Image (tube, rainbow, N blue to C red; front, side, top):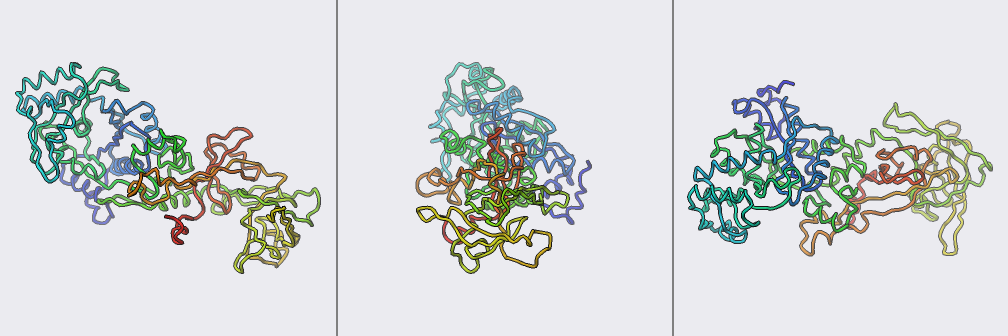
Length: 564
């Protein structure tokens, strides 16, 4: 695939990253586009990572380049092969694949040798300050830092101590290797940053071979260089780290990629911090990393989101230079738009009340033809059993209703989806006065689509035959938090903002054909929303997760002041 002509940029709408890429290609700074996606395997990927995945892989594809997957495994305490496997699965599920697979641990020996080079050049030293002392010496944004008392050690002494650090002679936290840059720099990242710390821990790939591990800022840029990356695309919090990224490359005299920062993805009604997501899992506020309320890719997948909808969402929001918060509605609309076009429809009743058609012939069952997907002309039809004893939604009936209520009411008429117009003439109540059965007549001349009658009515409701319906479990998932920005709460913690109604489990009655759908299948429950078959489904025990409602119900509640 040939790269686009840089001269065409003037006629094509480009984001600021593509503009920078085309400028560098035109100047000859780089001969091609090589990007990478470098997650740390210390948790499951979330929707924010999906944005970075789409960006890095799509840029490489558009410009005929390559995109590597590199696992930034420099902290053995927090990392695990479980997370490595999940990262790979998520990337492939989103529709991408890497050109090369690397690990930061692949480069541990080279990073060590480069550290020796900086020590010999007098640009790195072994420091005996504790973590707290290092923080105190660092200064603040308003005060310069102070030089470590160990800063002027001779290169030979530093080389000896660093070798002994590698040999495991010293306990955790007793010594570090630091770059010698400028303790007076206004950029705190340049105030003699730590390059290595002592950590006696078993690594998921290298075992106990190492007891010193590189810090992110030391490993990141050099790993990019070793892979000949041209554009290191990262999120905005690394903008202040860029001078350090450049300093290491320049002082080592190695290939120097260009780091470009973009705004990370923040979304309403959720948290993106891996630490907080881990807390939700470990404290069992959710069922796991793949809980459908989680913003993780595995959670979204289990909830019923599709790769296409997530890619469309990432393309829709684009890339920006400044942080902002994206409304959850955008993500929800992306899955609505995709599922509306591709999934079949079925009828399901979630809050049932009995409806009896008293003039329906006894023991008669009629098969009604129903459209699988009105948005898909090739979607075909199905046959649905219909008789005189049905379930309908409780909210579709009012004994007394306002003037503009167009569903079923006593003394009123409504059309049954794919069937007939019915007239309600009475109800049956229990001892508490609750309606337990609705009594109706049907008009045989009003069969849907057959044009036998000119009679019209404004309302149409769905139903299922009581005799033929199948009982299933439905998990009605909603937003995990009740406030837009749970991470910014002024009182308590983000856990105090958890939505107690984020999961409601109930029983529903559905068309019998719904039981033919295997786990992972998406479907629209007519007039209800989009659902998918959960992996907990077993023969005789079907479970459906609500992906999203047909409309943005939260927006309506907010407009009425019913959501905090």
